[in-house]
Length: 383
Image 1 (spheres, one colour):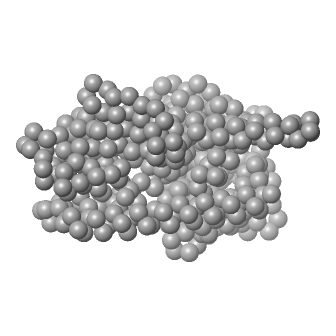
Image 2 (tube, rainbow, N blue to C red):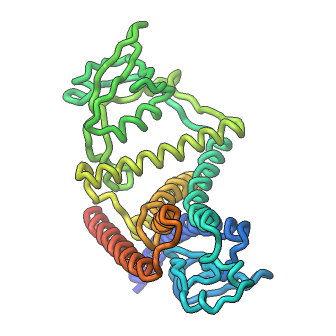
Image 3 (cartoon, rainbow, N blue to C red):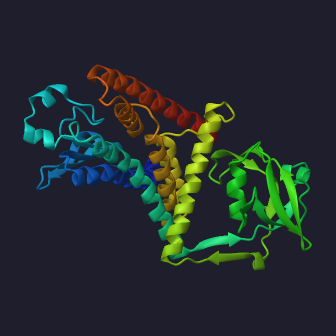
């Protein structure tokens, strides 16, 4: 009996170890995404009926002085801002309600807002995600600095892409395709996203500069938690000599710049993966859903709060990019409708928009099911 109780307590602790970091990371990212929509809506004069973290039944909430219902809902896998004139959380127009609106109500309705205002409100969500990532990365760099290792080659793996390109121990990488390399990390960022693409690598060897042609190979690695990642690799090991390792510290403006660069790198890496996946050069097994996010959050939490914040910044970039995909139901789908409206001089018909929303809902649900299935397969492989 005692053994059973100990197992139950252990299982409960493990669950909390994943659940609490997951809720922290997801709530932070979703809150700032919806806050972007909310602030620009208020700024442009559109009335906000509800600001919800989560979907489904309300757990608790309150009304502010402008009539917005701030609520925490039971299903913490998203959120929404609902505007005057919306039929649902996806900002589909309530046609009947819109027809009954008087002139005063129309002035506060999202549907009757000028096209630039609607586009700004929709775009503000993903933009807020990118800004959140910049702030988090900048804060980490400002407070903790960034460990930096010189791009010095210590070993070259036999049979690797680096060996084929002619790398030698002691080479110092100066540039890749003309882009200056200041650290081993800078080199890794480019190489990881350049599998099967030939790179011109400028190295310094015995005081002489050489240009080498290297093509990183796509290989599967483990991230230390058992998760499998596919990235481009050259097959070289960094020098761990103390004189080549340092912590780079930043002032406030420098930290913001470094945070923006890190955010852009995450955008480029994610976009590169999606692009390679679309053309069939990358598998879909790295697409994860809430189960994998929960596991990753728990894993990163074991490394400390800074690591968990770093994960939140990366997830914020991913959610910002995902929402810009031009699928109805997502922010990108709304922006696509607005682009068509700008070209036509009038909005698409209500029937067309309704069909688009239904198709978008089906696609989003299919993606969620696929991602969850991927999560289950991934965890089964680990177990």
